[in-house]
Amino acid sequence: MLNRLCPPSAVRFFSTPRRRVFPAAAFCLVSSLLLGNGGFARAQQSAQPAGTSDTQAASNSTSADMSNAQANAKAAQALLDVERPASDVGGKNDPDSPLNRKLSDKERFNQQKDLRQELKGPYKKWATQDVRWIITDQEMKAFKSLSNDEERDAFIEQFWQRRNPDPESPENTFRDEHYRRIEYSNEHFPAGKPGWMTDRGHMYIAYGKPDSIDSHPSGGSYDRPMDEGGGQTSTFPFEIWHYRYLEGIGDNVDIEFVDTCMCGDYHMTIDRSEKDALLHVPGAGQTLYEQMGQAKQADRFKGGLENLGTGPMSGMQQSKEFDRLERYAKLQAPPIIKFQDLKLEEFLSTHKVLSGPFFPFDVRTDYVKVTDDTVLMPITIQIKNRDITFQTKDGVSKGEVHIIGRVSTITDKIVQTFEDTVEVPVPSELLPKLMNNSQLYWKAMPLRPGRYRIDIAIKDVNNADHIGTWAQGVVVPRYDDDRLSASSLILAAKMEKVASKEIGTGNFIIGNTKLLPTVTANQTQPAIFHQNQNLNFWMQVYNLGINQDSKKNGAMIDYSIINLADGKTIFNTQESSATLGASSDQITLAKTVPLSSVPVGKYSVKVSVNDGVTKQEIAQTAPFSVE
Image (cartoon, rainbow, N blue to C red; front, side, top):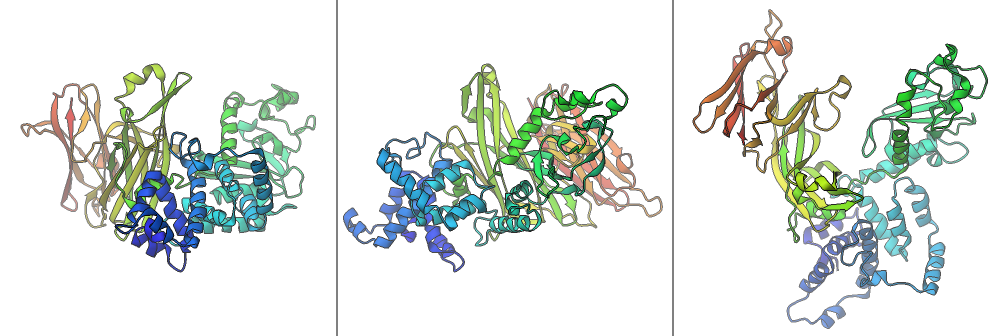
């Protein structure tokens, strides 16, 4: 059975001693079911010898094969119901599917009775304890719909596979890390109940170790920050966990836990006044304004999310209450699944030919030095609005695109993965005017120098058969210490400096600059600008020589714009590296040139660096056109 559904390489991989063949059959059945009933039928038909009838072929199958196939097919279908839109043939809304036949009252009663009896032992523990904080509602519903242990085994195997950062590896580092976090929580956060059941255990299991912890295990004297009203008070024991970034939640996430019972049971709270032990004691623990007579302690209890006293920043805090509620709700939800779209994952894994309409998109890769052995590779994806399917509701047209990608070595070892969803909400009346606009998605990935393959797949969420794929080999450059070198020369539609707190963080930010790169179908094709725009270009230079006497660099940078039609230079300017950082061996070049006086045509930007200390020269060019 497995040989009929999977290629020989897949059979060899899934038949290793470290992995059972049975769950592998389930995984292959998922791929077959994703192709629709027709694809599955073709796979069966192609496995029959020439001249063999359907009846003869069926008689050649063993009862064990059929039993395993049915169990795995149902488990696969349960997961597919989580992924498939309502419009899919054979999906959960397809009335012709035998899996969706309406049950009689007696059948439904018997099914629920059997479920209560069967969901015991290891399966009940797995669903209600092991994966309680990471399983989605849809997955739990699908798991409970299964009727026997074979189907549940297949489901559990596929559950972990969807979260595996390296799906082709026999090891599952996500699963190993998950159970390590449970063990750590039970050891460090018990409070009259197992640590995994506490709020701190929940957050640790779901999101891992925080980047920093502000711990006050005994409570005591506490100087309130100004955004909490200022002044001094006494507190219950509390902790504040800080995460620099949580995918799907945001940057600089602070989670506060308070032990109001003084019993070690810290609970998660969004009310920062809850840790104030003197909150209900008249005249004690006053805020700054209360000490100055500009506010009363009773003013804290006028309703709202928090009972913080009036202070210099009270108005600003009130405006953030909905943001705090939204963040709290996101933290309570299961974490984002790395490879939740099995259909897209199949296209990445097998590089199969698309059967539906192609979803076009463009990709650009750049290279920026981070350390001697690490290079940042920003990947920019451009999708045109006219290629996205929009659905209109309540006056808003919304498009949604699911993106997954992976970077692998020449030996097919996966070193980086990413997954995200791009939402495009547009007022319905403006949609026709914005169809020619484009959406940009940006992902920066640190890599070591060497050769890699990038695979990207995108899916139109509102049109499940609308899928696009892109694959390309890249060479990440090595920046040797003794050689003058430069990053990619990036032409950008928008370029601006960012605040110091945003340096190096967030989308489209490299160093202290935010760049929106121009993306074309091929990086040798010219980027398109218009005469009412500015031409922005950015580049970094590395390993400038430093004069041993003056301790300064001494390079000259030349910027030119050349008309490709006649080879004439229409713009030229120069500057010294000393004006950009006299004592540094690395400088950043960022220039903006208005195009209002540049005639329509094709041009090239050239940036040349002549190092007067090491006597080395480099130059980078990038084509563009003005329309």
